Each structure stands twice: as structure tokens, then as C-alpha cells.
Image (cartoon, rainbow, N blue to C red; front, top):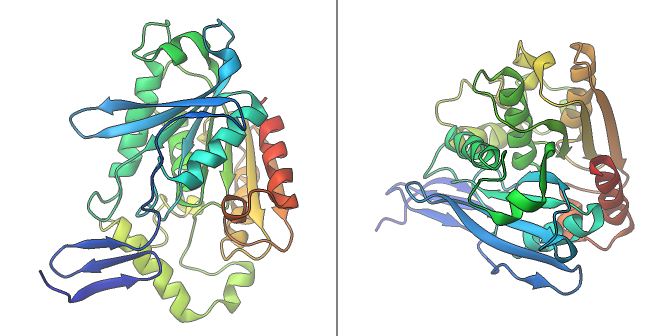
Length: 314
């Protein structure tokens, strides 16, 4: 075993020359449960035994054993495509709160992570979960919760950071795909989306060159086949089909002190300018940093954001 480091992305991940990966955070997991505080129950399902692809489902306990149809949110967790899971206490707590607040069913996708599983694997895994959800269209799918309680005509995508990037790319696939999913995508919620670009925009011009290089090499670690920061997967401005984005409405959440703030605003303006026919909303949290709501869920701005996302969905 070699201790020689190939890439050091502390405090997130270290990649050793012998291929070993050391994740420095996002390693804790919690089991599914009935959350007494929110009254939300969760369970884990295997989507593909072959690849190990799985997801965690959340449902307000009041809906179980009823025929009440609730909107369905498909959630993609953040972590730069490299760290965190759908089973981390951070996401488990957040999605319990969101499922209760919005009164929805949630499917949280545990896609395979880079660098062991480089992009586009996370995108392909996420699409496989959407196809699995689609198999419940006639209430004949493998999950009784989805058969009984998920309204597949009211589906939303959401994610934070890299997960917001996935949510955008899944909405693009829905809009462009000839492989029709039997779900109706109503809208997407992108929280502090992980987008980039070669040319700096807005306040990015003041960004240190070293930090810019760090973000590019982190992206290249996740997606070795990329052309760089102007790859349409990370820079939607370079996507000639942006106006075909799936869904009818879009909520982009940005944070004033987030290094990705400019990209969130730019994306929302871009979607409008390209002639996408849907409704675009932006919510900015003042004085806050990247994914602040996950680390400080009881702060005023996090509560306001939870309410806004809930009303956007329901």
C-alpha cells in the first residue's frame, strides 16, 4: 500500500497513486426509521442488484395504508460527486423535514460515486432510478409505497451542489429523451448548483487563480472524460438544447457568500434567455454560505428555504 498522494482535495477526499481513495467526510450513515419528530417513515430499496444501486424512500406516516396520492420528489445528494451518500445523517434529517413540510413522497438516490465510478456513472444511475420509478406507473412496481401513494403525474427533481447538477442533467434528459418515462416532471429545485465555466462571470473575476484551478481539477477527478469546465454537463451555457429542459417550473436557490452564487444566478437568467417556456424563480439567502441549510437547519434562512421549497412542490 503506497502513501503517495496523486490528488489531495482536503478536507473532502484524498486519492492515492495506488488507486486507494480516502474520504475525509460524509462517511457516517444512519438506518431508515420512523422519525418521531416529523412523523416520516423511511425504507431502503435496491434498484439494481447487479450494480448495487439503491435509494431511500420517505413517506409521511399518515399516508401509509391509505390511497392518498402525494407529489413525488426525486432527490440527488451533493458532495462533489465523490463524498456523502443518500444514507448520511445530514440528508436523512433534511429529507425527513422536507417530506413532512411539503407532505410528499421522496426517493433519495444513492448513485455510485467518483473517482471509483467516474461520471457519467452517477448520471446513468440516476436515470436508472427514474426508470425504476416509472415502472410504478400502473401501480404494479416493486415498491408498495410508490404504487399506493406516489402521484407520478406530479414529479419533481431536487438536489444540492453536485446533486443540483444531477437534477439539471436529469431534467435535460427528460426533455430530450426519446426513451419516454411514464412520469410527468413538473419542476426542479436546484440548491446552490455545482456549475462552472472557463470564463469567469460576475464576482468570479476576483476568485484566486489557485481556487479556480482546484475546482477544475476536482471536476476532472469526477469526470476524467470531460473536455473541461466548458463541458455542457457542468456549464449549461454550452448546451445548445437548454431550452428543451424538462418540466414547467424551476426554483434556483443561491447563497450570498457561496462561491457558486454567480453560477446559480447566471443559470436562471440563461434558461429564461434561451426561450424555455417555464416559470423561473430564484431565492437568495443573505449572509449564508454553500449548503448552509444542511449544517444549520434550524437557522432562519434554512427554515425560510424549507418553506419556499415545500410551497413550490405542493
